[in-house]
Length: 489
Image 1 (cartoon, rainbow, N blue to C red):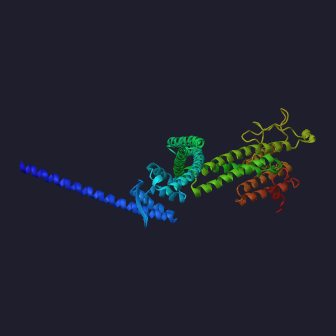
Image 2 (image 1 turned 45 degrees about the vertical axis):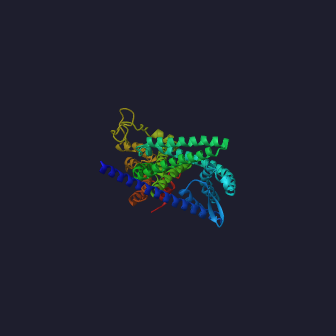
């Protein structure tokens, strides 16, 4: 029993020794910290009074970190001068002097709460009261301006995010578009709350409301900027995915443009199309859209900008539709000019020449129908076999011209197979149309096939040989073809 009591006594002695040592260490640490805080306070006050406000702020922050409470304990500054330990007061003054009023506010509030400087450090306290009023006015104006700016910017960014998500091609790339929209909605609610606080703070001139409004507005704006940044970064990674359908849209527009331009290079282009201000303006607008789409694609590739690609796709689709509509309008205009300019049959010719049936089944010269051998009244055979050929020539000329006016140059060449038994004037007209068809194919192909140009010249030569009086009329053919027809070999 005695041994057991002795053992317990030893344990208690050891514990007591440890506790005393720990307490001594704590006291020593507190003493060192207290000494460090007082030394930092002393140097901070000296720096402040010498006008070294930035240095003073650094030293006084150290003092507050070591011992944050103002106290009546006096600290020797220099010689016999001793002042109370009020680091919050002097630190607030130093920060205000460097234009950091918002940082100074918490230290001013701490100094007021400690209620030391008013009685024991009146000089510094009076300075703090004046600075506090000045900072209050400055901060209220700053908070209002910052809140207004953050709310406006945040709402603009929210609108941009909504516009991004409203684009079907882009929204499909974002698998979590719904979650993005929800995050943006919550940030927008934060902006609305900040706007409400700001209105209340303006009416009451309450600095706390104004400060909270500024912070809420900044938080909502920053969240929206972060969301937009994430969305844009993900879309830029998907530029290649967006690029292919955009290129397809541009190619479709270019094909529609080529069809329309080929039609403009056909006969009666100047007479029927260039005189139309509306068609000219629409063609210029469509070309502008297509060029802008190409430029946006080029820029988007350099900057990896998905939004410019999306805009390029819309422009290309609009250009394709415009060119398709223009082609249809130009075709109608050309057909009307051709119909209006078709010469009426002479009375003497009508009396001497049997009437030619319209191009329906059974009409000579129409592909796929049997030749008609009886063009005279029933029971009377035609005078000669050549009579049938001579009567079919006008039908083939009419069909060939219609294909040509519609921009179908190959069908013009296929239809107009010149027969040596046709009248000379009919053969001359046929060769002229065939020459124009070859030349139009030469121009629409980028003037890359010299054989087409040679064929056009050959047809012109054959036409002049058949009837030199037949020439290309400037009302019905483009200037480039007129120039070629006027050239003699």
